[in-house]
Every structure is written in structure tokens, then in C-alpha cells.
Image (cartoon, rainbow, N blue to C red; front, side, top):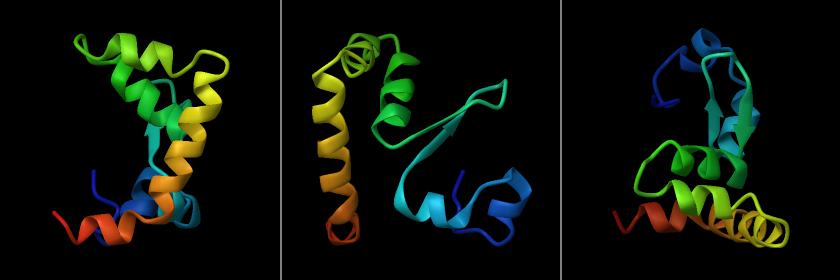
Length: 83
């Protein structure tokens, strides 16, 4: 779902400030994950990438994943120009 569409934030109950800074994943129960935890959750849902998603939740690796996510999030607008 794109949050660029009008009324998307309100329709899905999303905080526009939060979604401008990180990816949000919400499961069927309404539980939400953000940032690197959201990426790990998405990877865990993929049969081929599940092991990577599980690895991202391990102590030490989780902290590195968060640092990496924040680094990429800071420059994401510059990265978008490449696509």
C-alpha cells in the first residue's frame, strides 16, 4: 500500500509522521513493527528469505540491522533518484 495516496494514513490508522521515517508492517491481529524489525518480519514471511529475517532478530545482529536501517533511511530520498 502506498501512503502517497490521499487519505491513506487515515483509512489505515497510520501516523503520517511515523510513516515518513520508517516502514510499518501490521499483521492480521493489528500488531505493528517498524524499521528494521518490520523488514525482518517481511523477510520471515518469505520462504526463501525467512532465515535472514530470523537472523535479523538475534542479539547483536539486531542492533547492526537497526543501525543499517537508520543509515539507509537517512539517505532514502537520494537512493530513490536511482530507481
